[in-house]
Length: 401
Image (cartoon, rainbow, N blue to C red; front, side, top):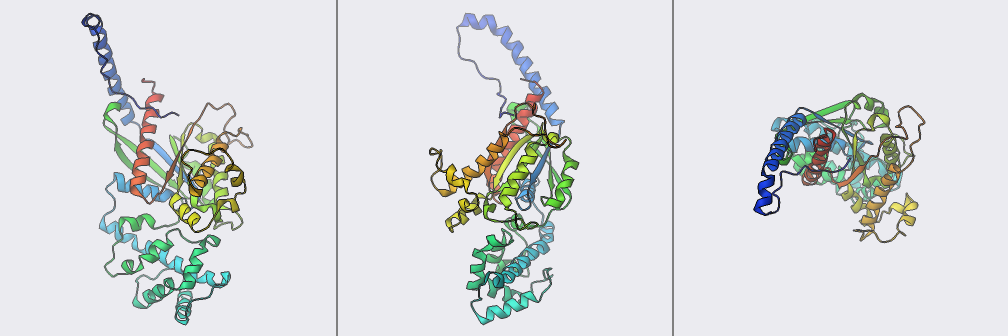
């Protein structure tokens, strides 16, 4: 797949009048032909729904991309829909503070005060589900704990246990969120997380550039659960998929899976990418990789985390000649993760199962974007590029240029 944009009819350089006279009729014929070609192409593209499949491990940001499509192309969320997200956000906060308190003893960290210890006892006495309402007692205990130096030290070691990426965001905003009149903001909704089970989809329309015929194109995007026990459902939506958006969390190089504490999350993502790249049912689909959450990755590196402690081969990678735009450890880490994916796409295909693509598959390209799924501007710009690429490929497949 190549990124190709159809050009509108171009004005030719000035030529002598005699030459222009001789070719005037020919130009008119070609212009009419090109006009009809664009018109036919536009109708053919509009009549085809582009199906995009989001794949990746759990917590890589797939559902957040679905939310962004709704914000960008379906006028976002109504107040009623925002209120429906409140229990989900409450649950995120409750799970986060419960997890932090539960890990204090395991990590050998002491609370900063007796008041915090009493607050911890209160939180541990509660069930795993969040309270329906944020009463004053609950709020006081959560606030006390989040301000405790021991809890903050525990948070700094959160790569050693499962904790939501949005824990700090919600706990920092707890006073606002616990207000009786609280209505979730768009940013709150983007940071909220609920485990995806089964298959969900969103349909939206986007404008087609005028030089590609104009009009609108319908997109249908599918989101599937990324946990291991959900991946057997993926094949149900493979048919007719034109593009796969594969999400990898750059920030998870120092974390292990929730479902398998012995497996590094980034290693799992690379293994899964290899399976998707070689899957014969997706061989004709374009593949775009979103290297997501690089903002969290950068914060980890500034805090003293190093990918070389989990991927020793990183040290050898850094001995290569200076790469473009690699100025610090964060840049090198991003390039290292991307290179792991590039290397996978160059591996020979091995048919260990009928699901893997044949060795003789035609040339295929993979495109890479560094993203922050919670940043609407970032996703808007990246998806604009993805949209143009997909539309251009549709035109190419019609042999209209």
